[in-house]
Image 1 (cartoon, one colour):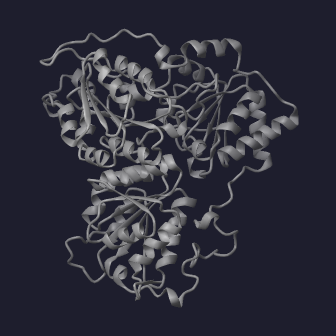
Image 2 (cartoon, rainbow, N blue to C red; image 1 turned 90 degrees about the vertical axis):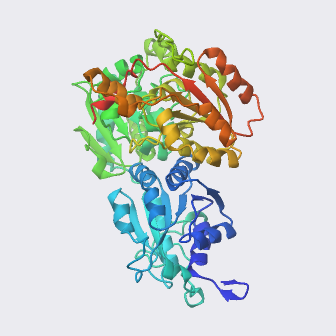
Image 3 (cartoon, rainbow, N blue to C red; image 1 turned 180 degrees about the vertical axis):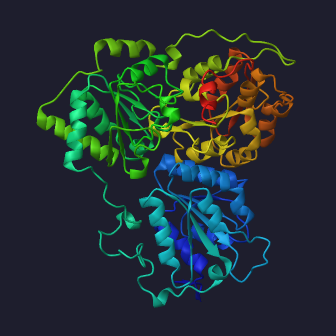
Length: 581
């Protein structure tokens, strides 16, 4: 390996190897500690997307990985570059996103460096896996190990690159196997070679036959079974196997919030289980005599603190991680297995038994879901418009339903955290599970805009909607410049109640002062224009005409919609959410 007659540095060798192992798009903020490795990534063919803040870069890479199915990669400077990104890294780690965080690291001898912090401890503290390039000789094996962990185990991995090792000459000529993805790994050579040059992915686990038979027994005995598919089912591509099994045993399919869209288009699909469930879906789930969680934790959000699981219902949980079984509630049967493969095995077992049942999939249920299965079909009393110095304010449900009818079907919806978040999560339809990006595992406000940018880079063929509160929008506002610079046709909808609305509605009824969580009006449309976005302020339905004009094209820059929403009432699901605090 050489550069114009000179030996390659470790930084250059690492960049080339990362591209060969699947780093196609890299997000980041470049400083001195990651300058050379980032340039090496670009020279080897990766696309580099420069964010304006490291927290945004990490979240963009997270969202990109979720939507594209590729390894997410973020490149950071050492010390403050990493600490700035910690919130985004924590979200990715809690979401089991295959994300590689490539970060410079102070040299071992530089004990008095201003940039010196215990980066491995920081990564471990938020659930990421700390790895390091230990020496020039082991560099490529270290990189391959980090990539393999990220992809095969679906983990967020911090790969530290000490500055003195980055600058050293890479001795590739002495180690002809150093570039192999499993070089230096204890079980290298025991399995088939990795697909497309990437890290090996282990075989998918399937429960043993007796466990599958026990699941089939419960499915066969159930009169009203419900499936709740979560992140694991989405990652397993389990839509078709689960729908086939549901049709055979008469089950109604639902999803956790993060897997929303997995069963889009199925006439018996209940959409989301939990706080965002429609009244019809909540009633049908609560009436089930068997609930099967497929790659789903069945946590308090998905079950409304257990209220959606009837007292006499049997509960089954299928997950690749044994530690997930029964972690949030007792289960009658726990199976270690891939959601798709386990569903296929259960369907085969029921077919061998000759079992087929209508179960919950009756004409009455189908008719009810056709009438009441979407939030748009649920009648509501519109909030009084109210007045402020600028004029009336729009009901967030009215706003979101109107937007849903305007937007093209092929869309991606990215939702930030806050009092507003239920409205886009409930009222904006999505065509499939790739179209709903819900960075809520850490419940941090301020990740929505970067999430939308990462998703838009991954799927430029779809219109991406960033649904934000005013608090999250202002936390992340610098990334509007990133969206403009990239020429993204991004629709940024800000549900602007001039407050941290969740705190207002949680603490306000107790008579607590709210000065710390309320703010004077801000002209967010003007701020958007200042960054180069199209923009509009929306107080009435007719104000959405400006959005319709932007949607008509060419959509060569983002549009910011400053929606002045009514603010005298909390989102109905907020009380339920705060019970988890």
